[in-house]
Length: 105
Image (cartoon, rainbow, N blue to C red; front, side, top):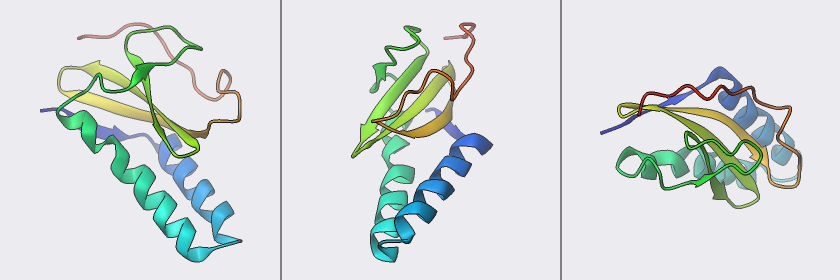
């Protein structure tokens, strides 16, 4: 079974998304952030469930699409996945995260 680690950057992304939506709808803000936070639970048993992020073309860098958001994660090894960012699908992602291609899986 895989452990899912949320990076500080990904947690900050969730907070910013929640704060932005909160301005229009506190209830929708709560639902969106909760949905985004729960979505990666599928990775516990299926680490490769997400598709490879086309901007990086690395086997270890994958994404789950949840509504209008991309949850980008890195398969570190057979026991760990790091959530790197939660990003609006309409925005470019290239400069948001730095990745390397060394993985142990």
